[in-house]
Length: 338
Length: 203
Image (tube, rainbow over all chains, first blue to last red; front, side, top):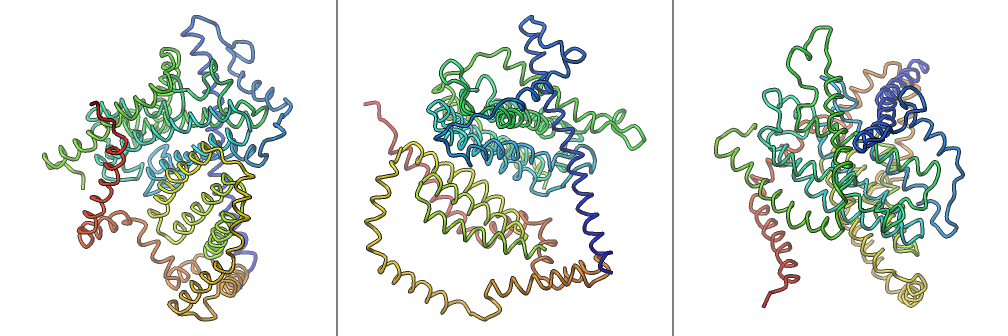
């Protein structure tokens, strides 16, 4: 009698652990491949060869990079706050990986079909600021501190744009749940009626993940490397992984919110034994990962005051105008989904 | 198990709120403040009020605490100055104790107080019931059902999970419509006033 209960509890825990691992391991692998995609693609944009020695066409380069970084010596500044110095990169990585918990990879293929999924994502993205802030403060270095303040100011400014863009999507779908949002795009992807919203949404996620043209915190010419100047070896790997994991995550969320997630014409997605839903979602995600690197290769870095001014004076009025316009259209034509 | 987690979170919130006051470094104090918010949010989520819990994280942790931290980091307060100022206030401890006692007296008179409500004792009782659940019952599935019906919190949470936002919106736009309008006007004023103060006229 005793054993029966305990075994059931242990089995349940084991099964949910395996569930989590099944999502987490491919995500970490995809993050590793995202780094090699970025390097290869940048090389192609700049007419170079790029990494091509480790493995076929250099696809094993990220693993050798990670091994090199792990084997390096960890240098910690003597005057730094040691606990926060270690906690900051770990928290950044955890918060960017936690976002994968509610992503539906197919019909019902999700770790947690959360009814407040969008709010969960927004909460996690607002928690991600802390890793950056504490990394800069705890290192006790002027460059790191300036980098973290810049990056935090940019992140909390652009989060406003991001959440208003997502709010408009919620108005059209009528739900916070990712699965419902995907299902309501069966007829048409939200990018068609909301193309302007998609444009400023994508600008805001570029700033949220602090990629070029908004990578002010690692402006190499002014600050050494931004908020992770003092971080070395394994804790630097954490920052690196967190950055690329949030790029892949935000690409995936873009695909879900505006491009129908795992939706595709019935030829590819159906109830027979060939159901390519997860593959479709992956391909859509890849397109946005490509766009992230494309923008990096194309656009120059903004000046800091331009960055903040662009957010508060240009993007925010447009976002607020759309928040008023879209419900007005929904009510006027009586097409609200609820 | 859930009750145990709720107790742990409540204890964590209390402990970190004490540490907010006692820690010397202002940045560390704000970190403990964030910990209070996160513990409270987890407490609310475990109670089944997920929407309020998550909006706690978005608003307090994501916006307000970040602003606190930002300002404190930019102010560049010297630790020695703070410690000196702190030692001046220690002479007011009797006053603090008097006010605190008054507050505690108020709480004890307002809230009906029984021995079962002391959290230490109730958590001990919970621990015993949890252990009983683990070792004595044979079938966990029937046990869950019974637990659901007996424990009002759990039953509520399984019911409200689906319609939480709708329920909130329903009561907000019908019974609380008047208060909603007043709040929105106050918030609008709070937004317009700083713009007006910081606005430079081009004369």
